[in-house]
Structures are given as structure tokens and as C-alpha cells.
Image (cartoon, rainbow, N blue to C red; front, side):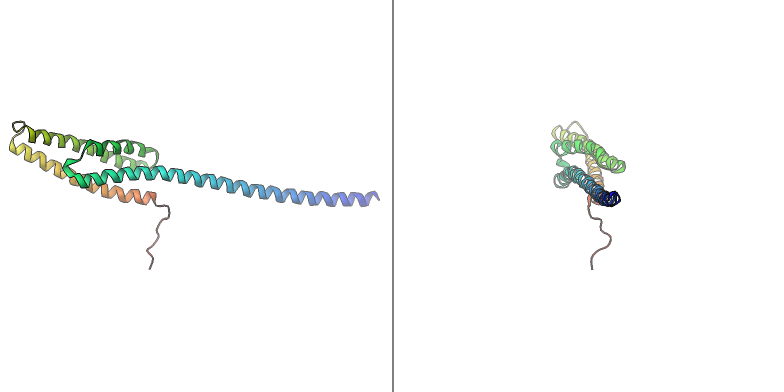
Length: 169
């Protein structure tokens, strides 16, 4: 009789070990899913922060196009902070381009202030100097707009969650 009982116990031990192995496998699958979910939640949160930077860039670009030589500090300064933050969310090359645009926008503001003063105080600049200043501003404005268009395309490619492989027929 003892051999029958040991066979039964051995069979039960084998069943318990299979159940334990199944539960361990199921636990590993659940842990993998949990890790994937946490990674996805982190990606969504990161994407939201990157979208906020893109929205600030869009607001600046829109103001640059709309206001032209009348661009205000209130249009540039929020973007300045955003350009600094881009270091933490985008590749270095894209961050540097955003920072370059922000720096150029500050230079543009300075020239706009010079032109405003030149128009208010006629003796401050000669007519040719004012004309030259206006031409420099127009050239810088054009360059800024072109840079913004290029960076916009790079940002869109970086932010796109679903990469487009080919257009649909």
C-alpha cells in the first residue's frame, strides 16, 4: 500500500509542479504586459510634452508671419523658454535649430526696436541708414520664416506617431 500512496503523491506533486509552472508563466506574461503599458504611458506623456513645444513653436511662427516687422516681445519670449526646453525632448540637432531661431528672433526684435526709434527720431539715422536697416530686417524676416518652415517639417516628422511609408492609392 505504501507504494500506491507514494505513486499518488508523486502524481499529485507532478500536477502541482505543472500548475506552478503555468502560473509562473502567466505571471511573467502579466509582468511583461504591465511593463509595456508603463512604457506606453511614459511615451504618451513624453509625446504630450513634445506637442506643447510644437504648439509654442507654431504660435511663434504664426506671429512671425502675421505681424512681420511688428513682431512683439510677447511673441518671442514664450518661444525662447520653449526652445531651451526642447533640449530635453528632441534630438540635439533639432534643439539647436530651435535655439538658433529663438536667438535670431531676439536679434530681429532688437533691429525692429532700432527701426522704431529711427522713425520716431528722424535725426538718429540718415535716410540711407534707415533704408539699410529696413532691408536687413526684411532679409532676416524672410530667413526666419524659411527656417521656421524647415523646422516645422522636422518637428512634424519627429512627432508623428505613425510613420507614413507610402501614400494610400
